[in-house]
Image (cartoon, rainbow, N blue to C red):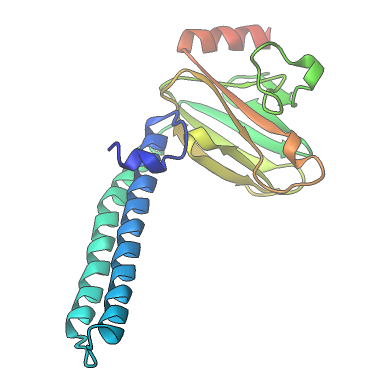
Length: 230
């Protein structure tokens, strides 16, 4: 496991992103093994032809290995990938909260469909608005707050051009397109604030529409909802 962590994608904020991070490192290790094998085969053929006087080369063994190894690699990738797909499918079975996300030039709008009156726009904070410890170009005036260990259904769309709602620490990246409603079910398992940015080139201020998701406890989430609606 420590060997695979050398290729990690950064901090993982949920169990699903941990699985994705591990699978990424696992595939990188497989690719490294393929690179070493192919490079070694070429080196052996070149050395054998020029220095070991191997004018006649039998390719039957090489053909056999080149048939068996790709099959083994695909089998090794199939088992963990199907496990991740199965785990993600479990999150899609049900949802306890529906949240509509709309991308605009250049800000995000959030609407909690299950809580009447709870909707707001989220703009990036300017430098003179930042509090101590808040990240530059990532903090917003209104964070998207969701409860921990709860299946949240995100309905993502756009009010104008194509945007992309992306949270790298959660392994989330979904395009927001006008006239199309993209559905994402997700369960957040760690308390905290997680940041992302629009990862689609959507115009002049593309880099100034960050995403801030705050994962709170259920009681804290209910208190936030009551405060915001009142």
